Image (tube, rainbow, N blue to C red; front, side):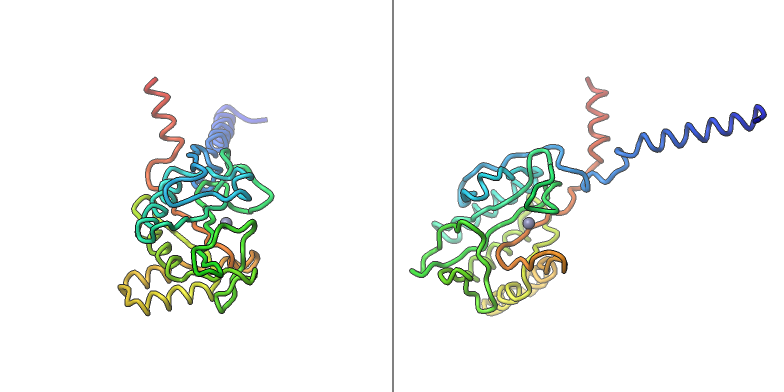
Length: 238
Ligand SMILES: [Zn+2]
């Protein structure tokens, strides 16, 4: 059916296609893939704790950058607001597995942080059993908590200025973003910082809840050679 030259071309084409298909995982965006080198976030540390509800789920793994980011901003917040505790909700499962709670939170680049809140006594509120939604007035739907603009603004500022990781997006409801930006303006914060915060904060897509009960922090894909290339190098060294 095929003459010699034609057969060689066909075989080469088939080989080429096979090689291309076999290399697909290596080509894949390393950041689109599930978390591969999980770093564990402790259940509590200086300035932060994972409240029981989220502790039980076990989604406390992320990339090194994300875990370091959470640890460092919590520490900075504790310094600025002594006694302040950041309540950390879900990161990812250690293997980046899908969970019943999220569509994302698989690449190790997402972290949910509960808002800092003031209780009825005017003191920092303890962690809630479930996320509390905040309306346009800043009141919590539980009738007890109040959105703490001062600490939440400081948290946003710490997140976007922390060198441990580049924060790509902070998903939050528009009315809460407005509160934070208004607060920053009232405190005469540097216009460049405010502009950056406004750019990073965004409402989540139309198909997901409005994020009026927590910040969803997404860090950028870390720079560097693809993970597969690094693995290849290591293999050669052995
Ligand atoms: Zn989230």
